[in-house]
Length: 408
View: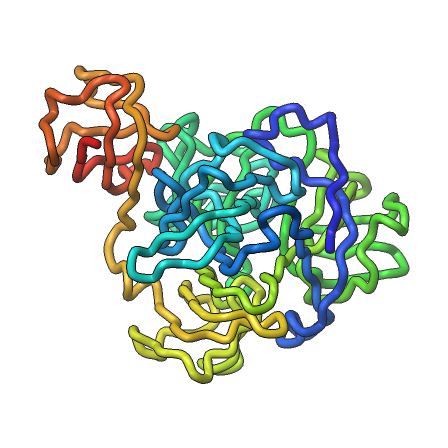
């Protein structure tokens, strides 16, 4: 169990990860296949969350409730937290953020559930380095970030990848792909006033005497951390989240907090995890986002050939002793061959009939193309009108191009 340590110096919680130090218990059952001791960061269940019977993990793909993994979670009564357990507003949730959802029973026919707690987390906060448009990658705090057709950029980064310049500080939400040494980005935001950096990944080159290690080649020193703020039993292969000073000392980044980098869902919960295969033994035994999966009795609607190290998959099952016993494994590239479709519900704002745009749930929607209108027409659009919009990301991934608009 990890405990957050609030940091009042971080004044912009809605735009910056308030990452602080905490303790984490090791759990060898989770990371045995990674070649080292385990690591969990299991938040304590409080209030209604102790009644949760399902768990989901993945990027937010829609609003009007919160969509994760194809399930619509009613978030009207949910507690919302950042990855340090700080209480946040539901309005701070954004498309592309990677979240964990503790919820009630999932109605599989309707694909709905009542969310009890939603917690978001990002992978790295730091300065931009080299941008490679041909490879569609950017270096952030020395970490390779892959930008895909499903990566959403905050509208302050107009132009998407081309808007990223060396030295600009950004926050990246995404999925760790350790087999390729990169982060597959789902959302990128500017963080110009960040007072601390952050990185999540697996420990390598651990020197417990010098108190140093690396994460994807990033040299980190924890010499100044009191012993009580260092998770016990650090080992190579362990997933951790590290908060860092914004300047290096003697060529290393200085840790101001280290905590567990995995959160294992509680036992006997119906689970749905979308992510990267981070360790692979066989199609029956592998890990997704560092979580152990037993797929020996699972259905593979897309076949098993594409289930491999680095593949992006969705896994459904039940948690038993820290392992997801899978009932179904889908390969996302085969399930969603084209651009990902996003769905938004809410009230129209900042309507601009000249540019044919409006704001919806913090995202700019463009309706200048071919749009299928339901229960109304374009002339019915007005500020305050309630609509459901389905569409795809524009080329620069900062706005949604509407394909269907339904009035509510």
